Image 1 (spheres, rainbow, N blue to C red):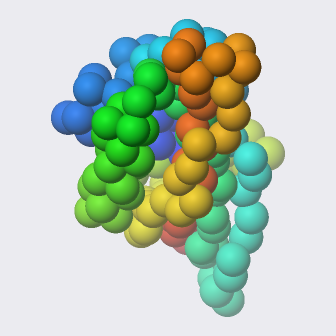
Image 2 (image 1 turned 180 degrees about the horizontal axis):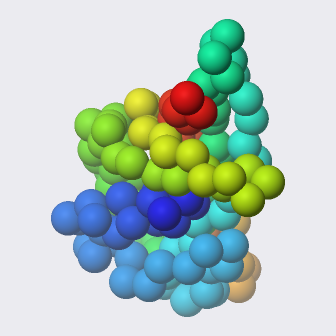
Length: 146
C-alpha cells in the first residue's frame, strides 16, 4: 500500500469518522453533506543518509462537506477536526511501500499530523445546504533502501 492508500485507510479507521462523514473519496469530494475527499498535494524528500535511506513527507488536504445550519453544527464540525488531529498524532508505525523506477522499497510512517482545519467554502452559497471544510494533513515516513 502506498502512502496515499495507507493514509486513506488510517482516516477511515478513525472510530469517529462516521459521525462526520459517510463516504471516502480520493481527489474528489461530493457537494452534499457527510462526504469527504483526501487530496494528495505533493511529496518531498526531507533528508537522505549516506546509505540512501530517505525521510520523506507527503502532504494532503482533507476536504469535508458537512451541515452548518447553526453554531452548534459548526462547533461540532470544528471539534471533530480538533479531535481528528489528536488521533492522527498517535498513528505511527504503519508500513507503506514506495515504488521508484519499478523497484519496491519498504517504508514506515514516523509522524502523522494535521494543521489549518477551517471552513473553506459554502459550495451552494447557502449555509443551510452545508459547508466545505479543509484540513491539511502531513505524513512523514522513512524509506529503507538498504
